[in-house]
Structures are given as C-alpha cells and as structure tokens.
Amino acid sequence: MARTTPHERPIYWRIAKELLGELRDGTIPPGERLPGERQLAEHFGVSRVTVRQALEVLRRDGLVATDRRGTHAALPGAPAGALSFLVFPVGARASDDPTAVDRAALGWEPPPPEHAEALGLAPHRPTLVHRYESTGTDGRGLRTAVTSFSPVALAEVPELARYRDRAGTTGSPRLRRVYDWMRRAGLTLHQRDSLALGDGGRSLRVTRRVHDQYARPLEITDLVTDVRQEELVYAFTLPAADGPYAVRDTARRVRSAAL
Image (cartoon, rainbow, N blue to C red; front, top):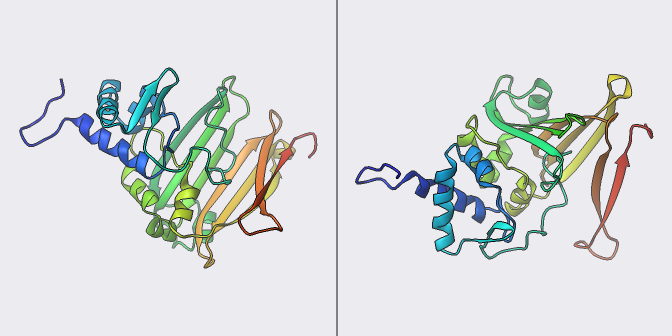
C-alpha cells in the first residue's frame, strides 16, 4: 500500500494527474491505445503497480477504457487519425512497428554548435534537446536523430514548455505530436528538409528546419540513417489547387540502390 502523510495523496494520484494532462494535451489522442504498463512506468519513473493504480483512478472516472485490445484514451476530441502530416522526429518509425527498438531522451543542455547558430542561440546557452535512436530487432537499420528547440518554441507552445521540467528524468519522452501542438498554438509551420550522403554513400543525413509564419526558427533536427540496410520513406504534403485546406500526400522512397 502506498505510504502517505495526512496531507498527501498517494503517488499514483500524481501519476494519474500527469497522465490525464497528456491525454488532454493530445500526447495520447482520443481513442488511441496507451503504451503498456512497463513503458508508462519507465516514462514516469515509477513502478508498474503505481501505474496500474493510476490507470484505475482514470478508469473509474471514465477517462480511459480497457478492452481486449488494451487501454485507450476516452476523452472527447479529434479522432486518433487526425494527426499532422509531419512526423517527429524526422525518420521516426511508426509507433505500431513491431520490429523497431526505439529509445528517446530529453536534456536541458547546450545544443550542437550548428543548431545553436540556426536557432539564434548564444554559444553554450542551454535549450531543450531531444535525442532519438531506433534499430530493428536484429540490430540493423540504425537511425539517430538530434533535435534542438528554440526559445520561441518553448515560449509559444505550452505542452512543449512543460517538458523542460522533465528533461533528464528517466523514461522515454513522447513528443511525436509536437507539430500538432505548435499548430494548435497558432503557429504556421514552414519546413525545409535537406538530404546529403555520408560515409561513402552508406548513410543518409537529413536536416530538417522548421520556422513559423514570422520566420522565427522553431526547431532543427539532424537525422542519420544507414541506407545500406533499409529504405527511408519520406512523406510530404502539398496544397491542392482547388482549395487551401485540401491536401495531396506523396511519398518518396530513398533507396541506397537509387543513390
């Protein structure tokens, strides 16, 4: 049984509150399955028992629902499929890819020098830095991405700003909806991706820069992927000619053989 003082709630109440915050800010979209208890325990830095108790609190209030397929967010809102066409970070594997072994970490630290220059940061000034690494279950197909966020992004996007306090904590931060958060904050996203070969044509480097409608930088990401072992699917969206809100999706497959 969780220990408490007369003026404290059990720790699982705090975890339930934090998880509810992620449900409300769209980190876990309505109707989407929550990560497993082990992943949530790592994310919040608590035991699986505490996570189980926190989920039961939310379940009693009708905020999550559990069936044969797992536990799902039950808050009203946009359907899970209504996501931004941009994937964070660039090169991230699909969340339901059973072959992927993903790791992510957040730090409050000085970014790489080229990131600091792109974001207009003074040398050695810290900011929120996200690191992503993914491999197949056989250890092949390594992808690594480093993202640095600008002071503008942290000031304008409340969901992102809250992660500053979590930087350096245990667990795997889930920022895959960061572009949706930016759009919800009223920012129009302009993306520029550049691709370059490295390591004698055996790796591909993708640098993504995102700025808003005022040309203020929001983030920069560097992805390096081993193109000898796999293909990188690079998807983008263009406005349709018949209206500003209609879109057409196009996908390019970058294969090492084609390079």
